[in-house]
View 1 (cartoon, rainbow, N blue to C red):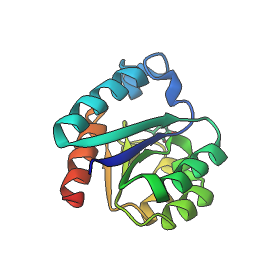
View 2: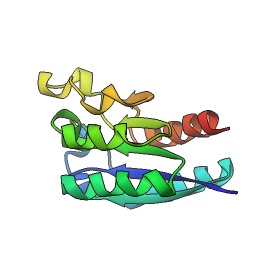
View 3: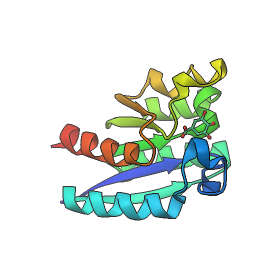
Length: 145
Ligand code: DHK
């Protein structure tokens, strides 16, 4: 049976391509969704791609993943650095979790150096731009095989 991977995106990522492109790149979130679908298909995975600016909606998606997903790729965006709620939701998910950041958060402001989500993530990819999502899918595929 085809395994499904949830790809969850946090606040302001709907503005990719327009928002600080020198940091986050010129690709849109739709571009990333298309690339993820292609790579996932090659890996034999199905994807559900989701973005929200609301913390609770991301928590709800993680809850849905408990029944519907084999693994999670998550770029929590600013909630990376603040959200115990998303961390706790991820702790209630049994499959592998890969955390992605487009930018190298460790090269940026000190408040971006700490991630609550990293306390649960099985892997973290930062600073690889949109390619980070594709690397995360490859890693999930390996963990799920
Ligand atoms: C995206 C954001 O919106 C920031 O709040 C994070 C992350 C970094 C990224 O690099 O994808 O600090």
